[in-house]
Image (cartoon, rainbow, N blue to C red):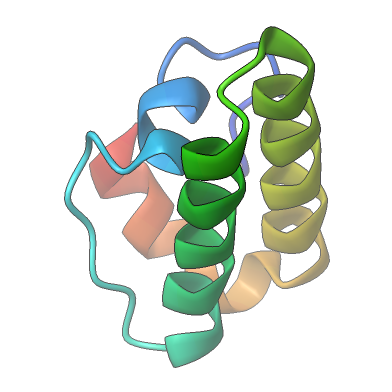
Amino acid sequence: MIPARNHAKWAPLVKGEIPVKFTVFAGNMMISACQRKLARDASVETLRACIDEAYAFFCKYEKMYSSELLRVF
């Protein structure tokens, strides 16, 4: 089960503060894209958008990432 969008660890995950290497490469690309967006614009709105984007991605591919996300959360 993917943690709720308001879970406290989503922000550090999309910011790159929690080091994680997913076995399925697309997850790494998702987090890297969020880090690049936040490097250009570190506003609260951009952070929320990145969390929403990452949450939607990991919900869509929950079967591939759920065990790895459990280790993060």
